[in-house]
Length: 455
Image 1 (spheres, rainbow, N blue to C red):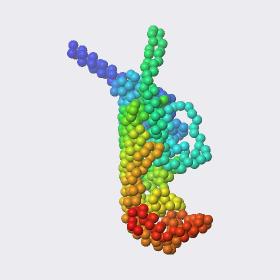
Image 2: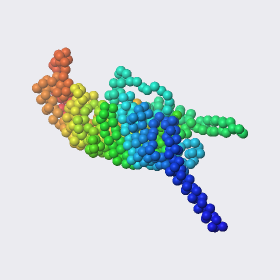
Image 3: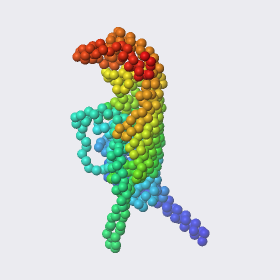
Image 4: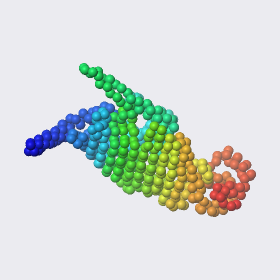
């Protein structure tokens, strides 16, 4: 009896092995082609794969040289994956969902800014619905083209986490939990399906990416690369009707510009989503990042120009029901700051040229501040105080400098010197009248009061 049982077990194992490897090596190419066609049919992504191996006994498959193209321009590649192994949940298949875990090795992603203010990768997450492409005209086109990546990213943040957006999403979540019933007529009887709208077609429980690289390219051609990238995603989901959802994301990598080291970064995203709770955590860390290499990311969002320098930064931000709780620390080193163009006396507490000159003499320069308020109306706290404390020691001789300028140039000349802005002739006549009523002592005392200095 034992001999028969062992023999039967061996036969069953041999049959299973034949089926397993026959499917994996012989039938997989046809099934892989069908799978890619279905993915292209039900999503906006345009995908090609060199090889697919499906292993039925382990509920897994292997992909080689997976390429994802821009849905609107198939000659532009958004991502390329050298090797990917995927494990499928049998329970997910029983519920007509694809629930998977993914490991990727050797990936390259080309992230590019678009003229409409978005990024090319956003097209992959959009629901596949008919619509005309957005045409940019006039003022709107000019505004979008002048937006840097920070402004574009913040626009996406406001769109996703504003008060109105959260209310709309909450209402959609309540609606999605409702169970729908469909009945199929059969030759004998009926078949009933029950489904909730919040069931995503594709769920990624975990996704690990190693040895990846990112090419960040602005619409004007400037670019920076992030290499040796490691990315981990958890609880991600996609559905043609519901769009994209992400639970946790972690990433780190080395920044390079034309092959030269330009710093490093780490990023963490966590989402806590429930019926009555909407919280998202963003943590960003930068270490010795060359600010010239990443200029296109921030240049239009700052009131000053950073000629050169490096930065290290830690930022911990919590979005709670659309409210911001953010703690930030920024350090600048080997930096040179200057006002943009001929901008006049600053929008803060002192003329911008004087402020830049004072900050250029502080190395390293460290700023600590918090951000509160809402996503639509953020409030910066501690930034002005931090700046004032930094420049105060370098302004000990402020009175002597200002008095010298007043004697040599007068009030008008002194203001032109510190603001970098010249008045026209009409303004000059008016200034001369005002100058008679303004003493040197008044101007000096006014400027000194900013820093708490005695008269």
